[in-house]
Each structure stands twice: as structure tokens, then as C-alpha cells.
Image 1 (cartoon, rainbow, N blue to C red):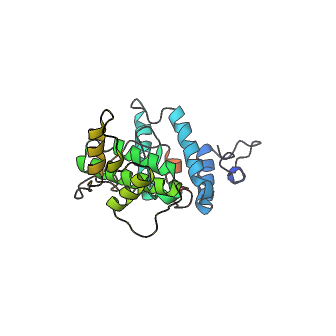
Image 2 (cartoon, helix red, strand yellow):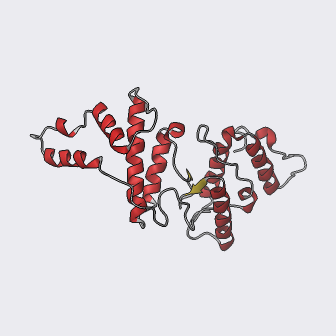
Image 3 (cartoon, rainbow, N blue to C red):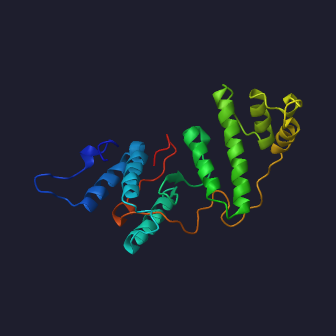
Length: 228
């Protein structure tokens, strides 16, 4: 895992003596990742894979594992990250599409899926997702967004490039009228007033975690290439 993420030289393990122990090895490598964060997210992802393999995120996990779960969760949130119930790493707060591309859209979708018990966050997340998709579309067609544009403007430009304006819907096709109504109303979506647990607010609790050894050394989030 250390080698695949580019931190093999930072692993202090000596095969002849069998030292240091795993906890100190993880601490040393994560300290190196904090100094050189370019591939830190890859390192964290690799560690999480191992945790998932060993069922650290299972509802049947031992009590000590559950405590370690919450410890890592807190450490990740302080570093600008969070974990889903399945142990997948996602960014907290507003997602910057320009640094994440398709992964940023996937994180938006994951956030919506986790907001089913909060209507305000659900609607706000849906609006954020539509805005991100619009920016993604414009960037893909060679028309990147410059400056600040409001939601209706972004949606109109994206739909225009995709030939999805309401006036272009073929009303002779089955469902044509319904499609036109959806396209006409989509630009009117507005984020609701902030509520507890609204988009961008860290959750009050979560089911994520691992050993305390790595939780205290989680690398800080970076806006470069989605690295932590």
C-alpha cells in the first residue's frame, strides 16, 4: 500500500528486526504524506480499502473498532474530508468542480444520497448538482465558465449547447409535453434557507473510522488534483 502510493521510502520497517510495529509505521508514513501531500489521498484510499476488506465499517464490527471509527471520522472532518457509511472518502463543504471533474460530480451525488432525512439539504444538494453538471458540460464543449454567473444563466447555456431548450422539444413525441415542462421549470430551482445539516455543513455524527494510529495523522485536504 505504501509503495503503490509512492511512500515506500518513508516506511521505517526493518525486515531483519521486524520493527517498528504497524502503528508506528503508519504514523511515520502519514507524517511524510503531510509533508508531501501530492499523493496523500491515494494513500488514504489504499488504507480504507484494507479497512473495508476487514469489515471495519460493518454494523457487526467490535466495540473497539466502532470507537476507532468515530476517532478517524473526527480527524478526517478536521482535515476537510468525510467518510460514507461504506467507508468511501468524500470531500466536505462546497465541491470545486474545476479540481475534481467527474469525481466531483460523483461526490455531489453521494452527498444527496446521504441527505434523504433532510429535505432542505436534499433540495439544496440537487440544485448544487445541476449547477455543477452545467459547468461540467460547458467546460467539455470548450466554453468554460468565467466570472460569476447565476443558476438560470448556467442552465440556459448548458441546455443550449446540448440542444435541450424547451422550445426545441418535439411535441409530437410521447411525453413531449412533460419534458418541455420539466425543462421550463428546472431553472427555477432555488436552494432553501439554511437548516441543520444543510449542504456543506458537517454531520453531527457519522459511522466511519479505523485505528487511532492513522486518525491523528490524516493529511490535510488539498485543492490540487483532489489530493488530501
